[in-house]
Image 1: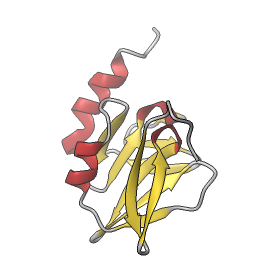
Image 2: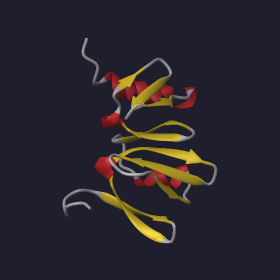
Image 3: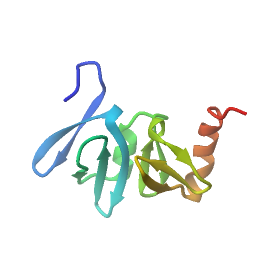
Length: 112
């Protein structure tokens, strides 16, 4: 799965512990009591965790919450629209409560 130097986490899914290499984690989506981890070149992994717990265990600002229901890996963002980001062909909304923090982080990467 990962080489020894690559950061990863384990999550419980279907009575197993599944290794998730952080560099391959595209985004996390909240679905009621479960989280759906969207992983590059893999099927999504479902786990029974809260967004708060996941947010606390993912390194910031590499991972940033942009909506009550979404945490994204900032390096995987393909483009940013007014109210959303695109990752791996998926349109993910940016909510008002998280917009200012996200945009001030992104600002340092904008060439003008």
